[in-house]
Length: 274
Image 1 (spheres, rainbow, N blue to C red):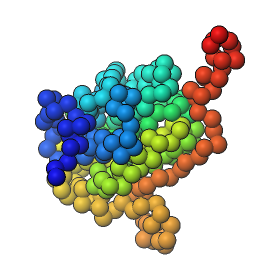
Image 2 (cartoon, rainbow, N blue to C red; image 1 turned 45 degrees about the vertical axis):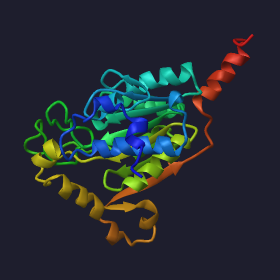
Image 3 (cartoon, rainbow, N blue to C red; image 1 turned 60 degrees about the vertical axis):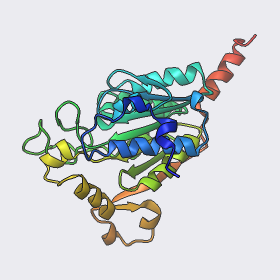
């Protein structure tokens, strides 16, 4: 039987989507939707929050409670939603620029609070919607419209940044490794705390073209050949991992209390429930 995923999780009257042919964002959006289905979440209790950018168009296509917010502020809006009703499953879909440039401050403070949000970064290493400017995840010396001779900045490692700021679940997945991505997002949703997943996408229109990476198929095959699961990497010698990108769950801890739990306790101790 054909999959009912699109019918169950998407606003079909909004399809087809506006992403460029070959963009990896559609794959990642499907992965998020499948993870929600696999977790058995009540759709009425799911909230998708996005900011501005190519990635953030996903909120308009997904058939849940959704907020398409301002640039860089998706995590701030999501924090308000979660504090207002901690029973909701709040998932943030954001981009590399949206989350780690203009929204970087919101990212690190949500991480230190350990609020129960799942943040999936659709990371295509470029500002795609606004014309191909380099972003905080554009690799060193790669090109963008604002870096025609190469980007001299060094790029963020999003999971390491999130863990250092206090996130209690971090990981990375790719558009090519769809089944692993679904499982990782499921684990992030189930984790009671702040979860950050770096979803490495492909952008053949701007990033790929500017850096001579080839078409979408070639870029996805590059992920296939150069991304290594973190568990498999433990068994490989260092020379086999040179130039490779690790994917999988990097860090999870349940030692830190979740923010809304503490907030509700604070209200009770202050007599707010009398």
